[in-house]
Length: 304
Ligand code: GDP
Ligand code: FO1
Ligand code: CA
Image (cartoon, helix red, strand yellow):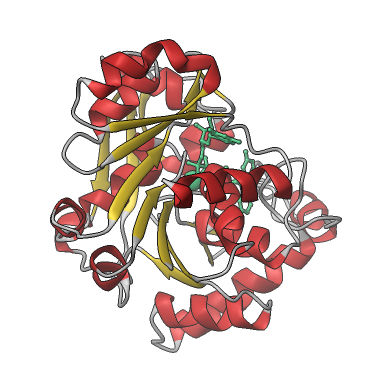
C-alpha cells in the first residue's frame, strides 16, 4: 500500500512514525509556515521534528530537537548578548547550518530536505508543502507576532484573533505534494494543529482541491481528546476562533476533505454527531506514547 500523511511537528511526527514502522510507501507532506530565521540560519521546525522522529533521534521528552543534545552554542550566544528564547541544540545546529548553505546556493528546500533525511537514514519521502517562503503571522489581543514568537517566546498564551499565512497565495506546492495527494491508497491528516499545521498546507494553492478530489481513502485523526489538546494551543485556538472545542469541532474543519474521522475512545459520545457530517467514525485509543502505540494506530487506520 501507499500512504501520505499531512503533518505538522510533534503530533504529525508520531503518526508518521506509526506508518513508517509498517510495510509500504510513505510520503509525509510537512508544514513549513512555522519556519523562521534565527542567527541568520534557516530553521524548519516541523520538517526537522518529523525527520528526527523518523530517524529515531528525536528528543522523547519534548518531541522536537535531538535526543541528548547540548547547548554550548546557545550558552555562548547568551554571553554575546543575543536572545536565546529559541532553544537550538548543538547537534541540531548542524542541520540548520547545512540547510542555510544549500538554500543560499539556490537548491530548493525540497531537495535539501531529501538530502538531509537520506543522510539520517529516513526511508520515507519527506516533502515540504512548498519550496516558497510562507510565514504564519498570529494576530492576538496583544498584537501581531511571528509564529515562533507567539508560540515559543510568548508560550502561546495570547488570545488569537486571526491567522495569516503570509506568502501562501503566491506559493506553489513542492514537487511530490500534489502527486502525494492524488495517487496513494490512503491520505491521513495527522493529529496536528488544524489551524497552524494543517491549515497552511491546505492553503497552498491546489492542495485543498487535490485532496478534495483525491481517489485515496482520506482519514483525519483528532488532536483534541476530551476537549483538550495533548500539547500546544489547538484547543485554545478552536475556542478563540469560535469553534466547538472538541473532536467534532475539528471534524467540521475538515468537511469535504475526509472520508473518515478517527477520534479517541474517550470521545466515543461524539461519534453520532460526527457521523452526521457524512463521514465514517473510527473510535480507538489515539494517544501515541511510544512506537508500539504509533504503529498500532497506523495499522488500525489501514485496516479500515
Ligand atoms: P507541532 O507543530 O509540534 O505543534 O505539532 P503538530 O501540529 O503536528 O501537533 C500538535 C498537536 O498534536 C496538538 O494539538 C496535540 O494535541 C496533538 N497530539 C500530540 N500527541 C498526540 C497523540 O499522541 N495523539 C493525538 N491524538 N494527538 C496528539
Ligand atoms: N519549541 C519550543 O517550545 N521551545 C523551543 O525553544 C523550541 C526550539 C526549537 C528548535 C528547533 C526546532 O526544530 C524546533 C524547536 N521547537 C521549540 C519546536 C517548534 O518550534 C514548535 O514546537 C512548533 O513549531 C510549534 O508548532
Ligand atoms: Ca509546528
